[in-house]
Image 1 (cartoon, rainbow, N blue to C red):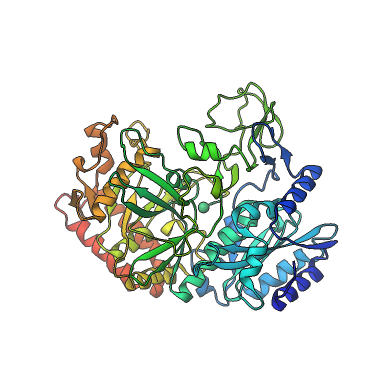
Image 2: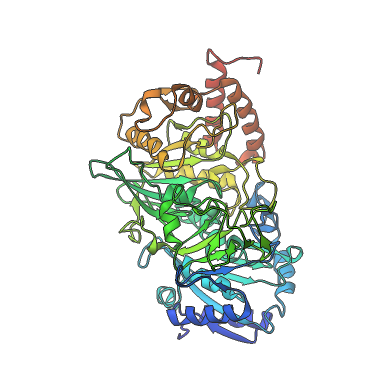
Amino acid sequence: MEQQHAGLKKWVDEVAALTKPDRVVWCDGSEAERDRLTKECLATGELIALNQEKLPGCYLHRSAAHDVARTEHLTFTCTPTQEETGPTNNWMAPAEARAKLSKLYDGAMKGRTMYVVPFLMGPVGSSFSKVGVEITDSKYVVLNMRIMTRMGKVAMDTLGKGGEFTKCLHSIGDLSPERRFICHFPQDNEVWSVGSGYGGNALLGKKCMALRIASYLGKKEGWLAEHMLILGLQDPQGKMHYITGAFPSACGKTNLAMLDPPKSMPGWKAFTYGDDIAWLRPGADGRLYAVNPEAGFFGVVPGTGTKTNPAAFRMIQKNTIFTNVALREDGTPWWEGHDDPPPAKALDWQGRPWTPESTEKAAHPNSRFTTPAAQCETIAPDWENPNGVPIEAMLFGARRARVVPLVYQSRSWQHGTFLAATLSSETTAAATGKVGVLRRDPMAMLPFVGYNTADYWQNWLDVGGKLKHPPKIFRVNWFRTGENGKFLWPGFGENLRVVKWVLERVAGHGEAVETAIGYVPTKNAIDRSGIDLSDQALEQLLRVDLPEWGEAIGSQEEFFAKFGARLPAGIRDEHAGLRARVTSAPDYNVDH
Ligand code: OXD
Ligand code: MN
């Protein structure tokens, strides 16, 4: 590929002088290049060929055992002042970060090839789209980037001679968590990552650029970069509706993005636009438009089967890189939640012998598939529409065993922003650390906001102010449990019943009662035809327990206090409003 961009060439030369690779390869994104890299990975053991007759184009990668998830404690925002990074991100002074990481990059690529990977986030020819260039010494990263982004020539053509791009520097280093850092320099449009080959830490187009850096660019340019799926729904009358859903990592975004309408809801069709990231911009008509900046899915494997997500299960039978799943004797992968029963014998995710008697899981709980979006059977025909799709409703969901009803609607954009800002969820295996601990996760973006979260909320309020027809904002919770600890709601495809009510509310009907927290559906407003959900279970699912909300308000206050005077007045007002409504409600028990 001819290098016409002087700034890019200069940066590549500088990085090569620092990292000292044996050779530099500019990636063009071609199939020949993919085949060549795949062969090389098979030779080094970075990839293991799966049974090519059953699963054409599928490979297995086993990562280092301590490099299996995002490491949030090693992820930094490097703004000139700590105030710009804010209380919910780790901060490192830019000069300190550059000094520290330069030492780790020095000579890091000796004996290795340095790949220059130009990539485009967003559809070709879209005003939403942005170019990045990742420099990496990992072939596995190149092969994943080729699936997850529009990589190579198309990105170089978009960049032209003088276009802007995000500089993304990555080296696996020695893969040690002791020498692992993922640093973001939003003011310089730059990411430096070292010491990890794991998705969110190493595929820098994804979390680092399309969320952290993009959220900062969104603030500057008046748009939103969000941790959201984008779903199109055709109703039985044939009308299309578009919604987004923000959920923390490993809380079912991919399942909802590929929703399988239940047989008892004939006439509904679901179309996938994106499963993880949405870039949203106000359109000239006053509506909010969304595009998916990615070109592939990097999904959690365990739990993927034809009952939970048939489209994903079928999608990953070809052209897929599996990371950290188990391997059966016939060269096919297996994981907990696979359609097939546990194999009598297999190799676990680390390549160790495994049997059903083993006490450990066969696949890592955060094992992943990387698959091209285009081969998903539910992908929308216009998923690469450069103008995006107009969003009617935004769902915010999280794992909450208690307190939060199945669904409720906010009173306004500002109240919806507050409702999203107060999202909290029980943690999952997508990040290292304890699983199942309740933590605040505003907009499901806690680990992904690239600057002070208070300013990010202000951007939400500002963007909303520009919309004549803002999407309606809803909170959902598929994870509420009953006294026996079991989920009350069937979930998966049945979530369409909740979405149906959401779309009815958008259309101006759909029965609801106004409560202190927002509009909650009446019992009869949720379509239960064809499912066995008792009145009592639905009542529990929809219950708003005011004393419990009284406690939640206290914890919200503690969280907001961290932001001091930077907390937007709109958020402060909504919090005060909630407190007033909850504490003055007749059934609020003041003892709490
Ligand atoms: C992801 C994540 O990989 O959120 O999408 O961790
Ligand atoms: Mn994600």
